Length: 158
Length: 120
Image (cartoon, each protein chain N blue to C red):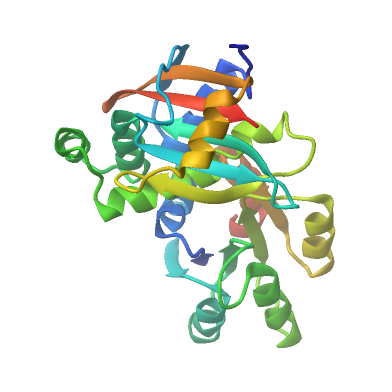
């Protein structure tokens, strides 16, 4: 599978540090798939055509959404243990995905924006899973958020 | 001084407030509104010294909100903080009297630069 970079690891690090107000470390890795991720955001261009996607595993979904509004890390750890995010964390996660469009805008030919967010237990639609799995332009990362924890993300250009 | 932060996302309003603090504007009072219509009522009631507004919102979007303020001859300093920025949006915002248009994600340095002359 071809590797691609929506943004450099430096750009991804900077983007999440700005969003979360925390030190963040990013390394290549992130071996999650659309079938075992916790949350996914889909981005479209001005014509509504799907352009990009971003996947988080459960720990990253919990830690980023807690860090955004300085919710105690214990709450995020509880969400990881229970396997589900509270509505509060889901609301934060949507906003993180919304701002994360900046990760794709450098590479996109036209401006793109968020269209849908799927957060577990909501399933990612099967046709979308198939499209993501076949995408030749994808790259995974491991992210560590200071005072919270580690998780995985995967970026796709469709 | 009194700052009105307008965004339909509660986490984003929190993020704007956090960035205001990081930029050194933490001693100002902040009031919040969830869309343009609510924000317009808040302006009429509270008369803020600065409005920081999202562009895309339900009910009344940020541009419609700014236009309505100017139609009512309310010249409160106004700036946008928004995810999507196009050249057309920049021109529309500037023509309507917006002082700044900041893209998300934003930094404390950007807030300092754009808001410094307004908030002193």
